[in-house]
Image 1 (tube, rainbow, N blue to C red):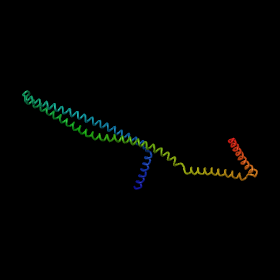
Image 2 (image 1 turned 30 degrees about the horizontal axis):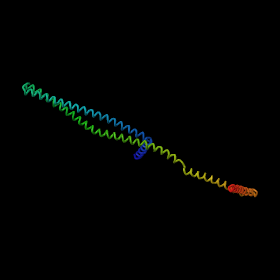
Image 3 (image 1 turned 120 degrees about the horizontal axis):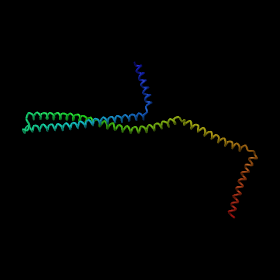
Image 4 (image 1 turned 90 degrees about the vertical axis):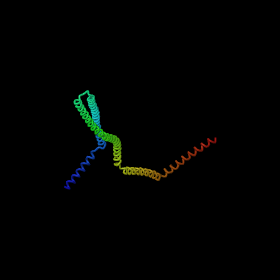
Length: 234
């Protein structure tokens, strides 16, 4: 039994893991909002029906009380006629008794309607609180979904960027760049070395010509400067 329990827990854990991966936060949030709105609509419909019943029972109560007052008035009118001698006592009393009983019956109905209306009105008070709470919950859910969508978008973009950056071997790239820089430096050093070696391998004639060429250039420059001085003093 212990082994079966462990296997069951492992299977349940794996199922939950699969379900968790399949759940889309935004879709689930939208589904929750839809359910809340459906519940709100159902609550509003039910509240409207209860309110309609309460109004109807109040109307029935008023109608019954009015009827009770009418029967009571008729009973009193009959008794007045008996007392005034305008109506035979036995007949008048019997009719007045019937009217009085009808008045009592109407009043009983009025009280029953009033009790039902009162019960429904108390239920409405509870419903009003529940409906308002549900309405507030819908508003809160809408705000949270807006933030959730924004967070999900930011998280998605950040995940892609970070995933891309995590696969970039920055140290390797910098190391390669350092090697390339070193290679260029080596080439520069070799070029300078070749130039220096070339100067040391000049023949005597080439070295003389090089020196004389530099002297000639200096003499030409000195002659030009002397000529400019003469022109200034002339």
